[in-house]
Image 1 (cartoon, rainbow, N blue to C red):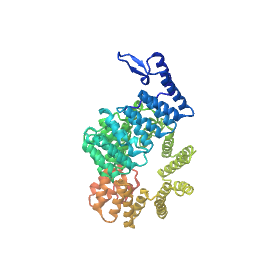
Image 2: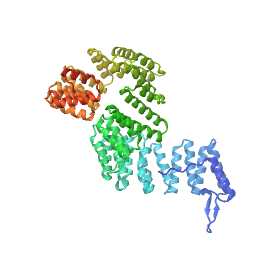
Image 3: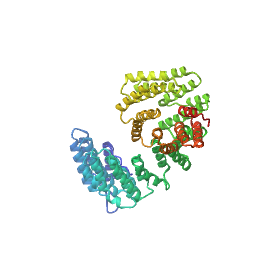
Image 4: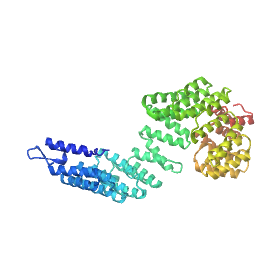
Length: 582
């Protein structure tokens, strides 16, 4: 999009005028062409004096007088720079109406000037005179060159971002873009713009309809697909269908990467992995894709593949990126590689990766991994001291230190000291739902189930949308085979807040199994395990299969679960109970 020309300062303008008067080659405000083609100066003494007086007043105690003098000079000379200077003087004196008057005079004098028209549009919106912006917006799009028109349409939501009446803004924009909607070359961009204005006005259904119409106009346009990606959530499956339709063509790899992030947010890990794989195949130079792929592979215990992906990310990031984004990304990669080495019991290599982290924001994560390495070598107390030595200058830093130590103790089955730490923290902050939830989970590990239930109900009372609390309480009841209708109700409530979460789906399947609905439990578990291969889900899926007589398949699933996490307590307990060694 073409930017307005830089506004000359008063001193620069006066110097230019003075030089022009001496050289007989004045600027546009003060020259005209003679019949023989030579340039004749129009800057006489009177005009020069008027401009000088106008600037002195603008800088002094009479900015309104200065504004009037400069605007009059602009009208007399028909010079765009002087019109723009009059607008600037009005702005400096905080007179929006005067700025609008000057901008409109400029646009009237130069009807083909997009800069003049854009000043009119932006001033109207700054004055919150939204209804009057229809014609200026229509002209702004019409005055844009054909190759720039879609970019001009894409810029419209920014113009209206600070408007207070978002619904009126959406209506005005739709009215102004009627011509663009009727043109095949601009229809998709225009519908995308309308969709964004509707979304800003909390009209989700209207935004989705605009995205659909934009894609119908141009199936391979990025705009409608990007809008669909922003709208994508489990309650709007039509939005995702827009993205998937776009991906069937020749999509931008960056948009596919955005879709993968949305799938991760929805806990649809296997689908996200496939999209990331496509990105790394189609455009292997996108560094972030390798970082995400490596992290997912690490979660699935694919250690060699994770190591390869993470090292590929490091090489690309070091070659391509600079600044804070690169520093944070590299820190994540080093942490993940340290975990790979830790899983291999290569503690020296894990420490070597951690030593490469130089980002202060990731200091807690790095020290937490070092503490974990020490604990695995029988030096738990050294690990705790390492964490306690971290800075705790702010409440946020103190909280991070505390949670890092709690996690270290929990990972090493030191449940009582971890519980005590959380109880002390919760006593100081009794309304902190996250602290209470973590305390409840440790109470369960200690076998204090009444305390766990009491704490979880406190969490729900404090934060009614805390889906983890509903799921934890519902699963606990199902696992103990008690109050199953209440258990199912709690888990279904959790799914309302986190639709499609494979771990909550696992809980729902488990309560269905406890209630005797084995076929339904199997259906839910198979979908959850496909979406997120996990040892605990494998334990439950195997048990349901075993109960249905499919023992060979049950043992195969249990074996996969052991490969994913050979230390999962639920899986190990299940195998012990059935006396199976897959």
